[in-house]
Image (cartoon, rainbow, N blue to C red; front, top):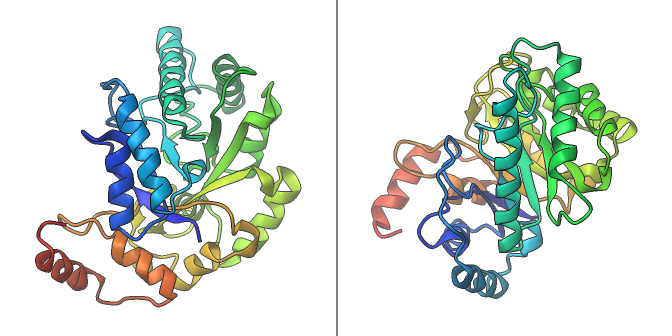
Length: 298
């Protein structure tokens, strides 16, 4: 299984991200090139990138499975303030250039928020922006993430994702990122995930799925709230998430945990162990506390 979590992109940049992933028992990871809520960015250090590639090669992480996530502040759906829309376009271009410098292949984006716009207009705006961002020379692939439908989010169902992709000039440079919490909160029953995949395959094609965010949900199906829970500790449940993770049709797709920290501790090492063992840990919080207390330099 290709599995990891989101990790920090700190002073050692990609090298530090890879080291953190290995410490969690992962063989891939997802990162932001800076804080997801702002535009402050440091220049990419080519030497750290070279060291990261060497480290990943030595530790069984394929750079082709590494995922970057675009910052949340980008909104391609609403064009009422054209300066803001153009800024989102230029900033996403810069983010793509940054991951290209690091040899990272995939950039996950939230399609955007319609706000007060008609949704069909908003879907057109997203595609128009992406057509301005991506050209024949673009190396990275943009992955549209399935959204929970909070507020005026776009990309909440197969219809909207298919609609955006239908307006794209270079469809081969775009894919999808499925998020289990978002799917649940948008109204998809993860217990019937196979049915969802069948419909997705029919309407868009499973070959477009390049990443899966694996999260439990704190909300009931269709709540449109987007609140992640730890694996097996939400309304989706451990067995349903295991079925997603081990679905043979998604065998070669990187799976990324975005579950919340428990107190001051990241849960990913123990959650990945649960997933690999296919055995739910009902004592995750206490085991996590014990682990970090016994490994203070972790």
